[in-house]
Length: 493
Image 1 (cartoon, one colour):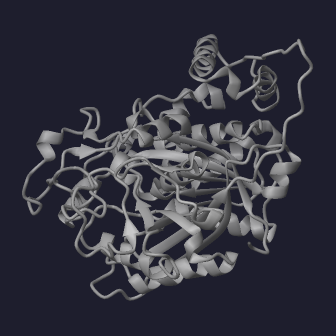
Image 2: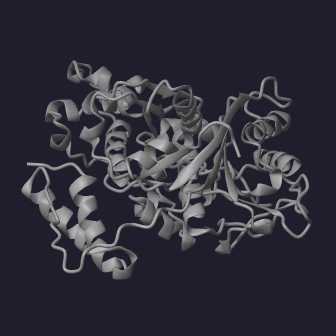
Image 3: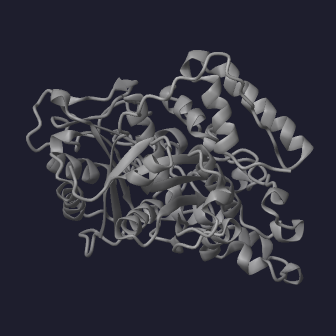
């Protein structure tokens, strides 16, 4: 396919609305067509006080809805060796990135300490920071931890510091495309040999009403509080929070370390809209088409190979048709009339995670390839008449991933920033794993279990018990289960 080596996605972790705190729970939410949007929790802000049906009402917003992470204030600071005084100053976005970064490494079966001192890069998409507004209302309370607790650069740097990672470490802010642009930069760093492994993260936290007021005044938010992507009734998006992280390594590295590959990242691209007709925040169809063509050409892929695109799909009446027309213009080339391109948007389930939305879409795309199925796109009742309906289709139920003429299906991920910075990623299925060695009959197996506090140990044991109860015993061997716990996780006091 491509001359350059594919990049293996070997670990994933997430904190998404609806209790989707790991990829398995996220897939259950997607497959089940769950709507994870709720009213604004009382601990964030008083939704009734700030809500007003008139978008022009000063200091008010047209929505009282959003996608929120449970227990956003919970953080095991001692686990990371952070003192309580400093922990109280750390932005929840940074906390989630520490947690998901660690979990992505362990999901890969790579203990974090194994990367200490290595050329591992950290690339984080992050844009907003509500937390300082909560802290700086009382000037005497500002201390030496206040600034480093919320600086966007530290969102990446703290993970590099705590895990002793020596590769590039940077935060990317291109608004809603931030985390997918971060993925693009990480891929370039790996392909150039600048780093050997890369952690890519994204985070967004909704802690104060001011940001939502601004987006409401700009007529971007849905009064009904739902992202109705590609629907005729689309009236804006709903804001959401959360975080995600993935671990990337060259495919040869994954094989040498015997890591399970979840999917392959075969191509990425990023560009800018330039001068868009209609204004700074209006997407440019020509730029989107050029970016998608760049990805296809870089990997030598045929447009028909792309079976599904996880679209940006925010649910805006202007942006959705532009994106759909751009996708159809490029990916319908040579496609038969009976094999329309499937498109969908995770934002219909969990809302728009803004700078973290690209990684939410990426993780969904990996799960689509793993399960060879496309989850339903919610709130799609009547197609927007401006869509190229003869060339695309929005699944409203769980749909098998098409595989035309027996070709390897590719999945694309689109992400756009409201200032015009675009990104696209192209994924391929993981290569078929080698057959594992057959275990000796009655071979003894040791299952090590440890944590950093007695309470955490009990909770950890309970999580493993649930995992065992929820999975068919034929889906894995006892030997593999114990080996993963022994070799793929950190061991604690």
